[in-house]
Image (cartoon, rainbow, N blue to C red; front, side, top):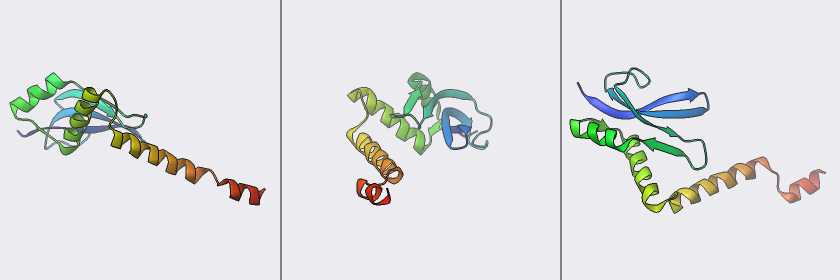
Amino acid sequence: MSVVIRLQRAGTRNRPFFRVVVADSRRARDGAFIEKLGYYDPLPEPDVISIDRPKLETWVQKGAQPSESVRVLVRRLEQRQTTGTATPTESARRKAAKARRTAKKLPSTEEAATQG
């Protein structure tokens, strides 16, 4: 049996929420799993990552292979714990995305003056 540590999608449409689980690689993404190790919530600012590190290390020692997305989450979690906050690149990326969203919603002051 090949065991993997991967994300299992939960939540509703357009409101993703992921569980970090240990599962048989032949099972469906959202199917049966062996053990839950944590969760990842990408929606709040900053996103929330909670993984039980001792359990994760135990499974890796037993031969479970983490997926690429889980590896990235573990790296991000380690980075946050050492620095205490999100990395500058993450913060800058989020600020830029937020600026783009607000720019799409609000017309510029010149456009508002000509329309009104």
